[in-house]
Length: 73
Image (cartoon, rainbow, N blue to C red):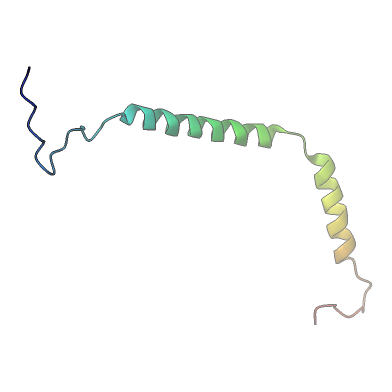
């Protein structure tokens, strides 16, 4: 029977500091690629219908007759 191995010294690092850093780098890289794809997809999507509706709403709010008092003051 083999003798028991000695207990490790307290504070001894048994795992290297860069253990599985590749996994972290891959996750960060995938998140960055996903963010870039999302930005491209959202910016390329046609949104003129919603934008035109929003502009009509803003135009309707800001239209005043000459001499009409302002609502905020």
